[in-house]
Image (cartoon, rainbow, N blue to C red; front, side, top):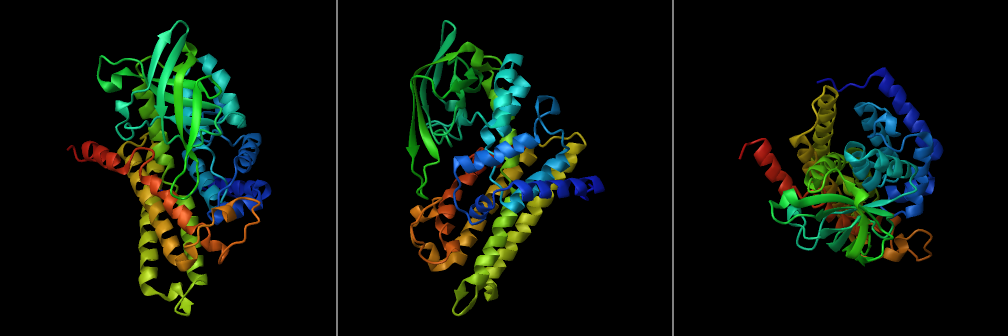
Length: 398
């Protein structure tokens, strides 16, 4: 396994660094680096710049507007974006439904949706989970019944991230009940402006409302919005989740976050001296660094194998499990390093343009909200418990 970067790759890395330096909004980067929220407009500004450069879709084939980058170049791009604290590209369009449409969509669907995803003119959300159907996704009950040239859809979707910003939603619905649960599911695209859709925010532990309940009441959707074949949606969903799980590892952003923990530890005094002099705390930092380095090498091995024509199987679950666990551990260390400064609830102070005075140093403001928000990482993209079951079957044969 060769993990060295070629001269060509190093030249590409410098090109990415230069682009980021010239195009990234410095205030946006500062907020992201400090764990503060950014607006839809901030994210869209960055995505439009990527689109204008032709870099919006590293994971798409070149003939559909992708970059044509190698897997190594895609890794370098993600690494440099994480190191520079760029906004995350919203994954639901370009990372999730885009590849699905490319693989399973009709030519008409490709022409209709792919250009708008690339230009960031159309935002998407994911309609998978339901009340009572999360990790056991095959038990979903949202129904789609044919009525002439339309489906009539009724049901409820939950934990729907950014639905309040979305123009479109891709959903799993039940189109047949007299069969195994997985065999009666279809994958359908829904215009969020359709009559009968209502979106209600869910306020999470950190005080934000980025996730939503989406209610579908007699929503009419054209039959042409079906992706792949009717009752074959489970196949599409598995393909999509493979893309999601590998991207969840986020090694580069975890590196950046861990370096921030060290900086907070240096600034925050424990009994008159820096936390970096506290052996017990630094032992936790070192152990986390070792885990992160191991994850990085695991991700590089997945890339190396994929270059040789061996796409990830169980490895996607491993990256998802370890990546999400490390992200949580880093927020725990951030909280510990912040100490008493993490106590005040300062959601108003975190908002962009707020005049609300900050209690304590700025690095303490986001520590607790980030900790609470990151509890979700071991759940989305297929809960870690489910991923461990997958590993038990695929690797151990249990």
